[in-house]
Amino acid sequence: MSGAESRRRRLVGPCCTLVLSALLAACGATIPESGPIVEGPVVGAGSDNQVIRVIARPPTPGATPVEIVNGFLEASASYDDDYAIAREYLTAGASVGWDPGVETRIYDGAGVKVEPDGFDRVTFSAPLLGRIDGEGSYLVADAGETGRSDFRLVLDSGEWRIISVPTGLLLSRGDVERSYRTVNLYFLDPQFTTLVPDPISVPNSGSGLATTLVRRLLEGPTEWLAPAVRTAVPNGVSLAIDSVPVVNGVAEISLDPRVLTTDQSTRAAMSAQIVWTLRQVPEVTGVSITAGGVSLAVPGQPSVQSRDSWPAYDPNAMTPNTAPLALSARGVVQVEAAYSAPVAGAAGRSDQPLSTLAVALDEQRVAGFDKERVTLLEAPLIDGGAFRVRAQGAGMASASFGPDGALWWVESKGVRTISATSNTVQPVAVEGIGTGRVVGIAIARDGTRAALLIRRGPQVELNLVRIERRGDSLRLTAPRRVEARISSTVDVAWASADQLAVLGTEGAGPLEVFTVRIGAQSVRSVVAPAKSVTVAAAPVSTMLAGVSDGSVLAYDALAWQQLMTGWSPAYPG
Image (cartoon, rainbow, N blue to C red; front, side, top):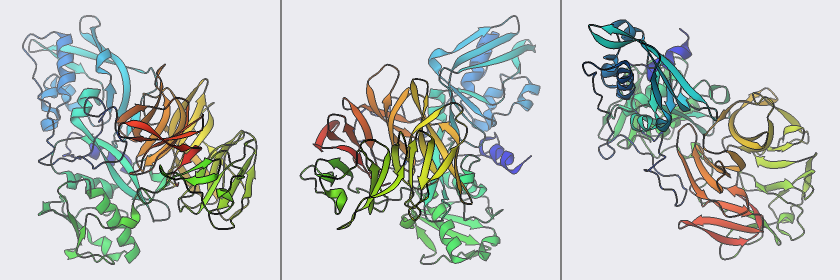
């Protein structure tokens, strides 16, 4: 068995004691349909956050094959004692061969059909919403996809039991909401400067959260994210004691002695990964790391590191409440309700040439396309700062700054980028999209991922891709849908390191702004202002919409409020 396969089985296999604390599917009745869209604290498995347990029922005497299959499906939501009750519906041989840890298929409980197929067979079918793979990654199903499974039964001591059972688990969305949680593991961008979330969904048992998080973090990133990130944990390092007790608020981590050979910068980065990951455990106030029985010396840190340490590695990569900018008849201005002040330099003049706006993460430059969308221009926000031409092409759209200052955009020939220090435009390969055409791009503020808008026929689909860097070449690869509700997308922005703000439609419904948590089933929405064409979002900041009539609106106090006359609002990054 490969290392990746072993890791996947350890994560969701029946013998694990896996416990985490975040929300997988916070959609539905527990999530408001309106209200400010900001990032809140993670909900954890503590005394104030009780885990909802599924009480499974064993088979009843004389049950029919259909009743046995229905009972098995219901009992599969209870993982107590290695799915002991669910296994009672199986023959002894089927129980030995059944591995619920391979994957979990998630179906819409409203469309389930469990029907007899002859004397000893039962067929299950339902609309498929997604699946959780063996590593815990949540994958959205294709639109309209149906899940089908066949069960074969035999009479065992006069009672029907399942002898042929599908691999993995079949759970309804409601079962998953009760039985699974999503949590972020944190790894590092290629520069070792910013943390990157790696969301996983796992069974929720309500205890041992710190142990599960650290164990899984040491095993490394998921297969999807691994090519885009790094880890400061030395290869092969594991827990010396396979437990992370939390004593008086301090998570006590004992690592094997190999970490003692690491340098100071590696220890700092590794500590940041561990501390940020353990922040999701409500009762953890500090972290103690030892190796070989001695405290691991970390530069600038006491032996017990505070849960609030390492702010420089913040995965959101920007200061909260950063002022957004927008275009107006007076030039590029700061978006404020009272007065929108022009920025410094040529960008702040009424004759500025931009029709769209992007703001660098360091807030020192702006860029955008001219009115014909054939020229990409950039200007520094300093007195006397002038515009310069960065690139020219046809059908330019969707300019986005990376964290290193590079500009990314889409044109008729594909995705392009240009670094902050170069005058050479670099084409970027986009793999795995088939006949789709990229019409929009938003680079994550950590520089490891991008949200793509891909046109497929009349619809524009939202996908997440990773950014792979090989020498001087770049490619966007392994596209994944991040949600199932949105039928067509108009614009997208990064609301935080693990959330997207999406302007789009659901079916034939009105234009809405959706907040989508990556790697989970959590989607919230509010009706967008009429004729909205752009959306802007940032961590712990007010969400903005740009309207085609020349208005910038903010979502505040459960409603959209007009802020200013202008267009193309944008936050840094």
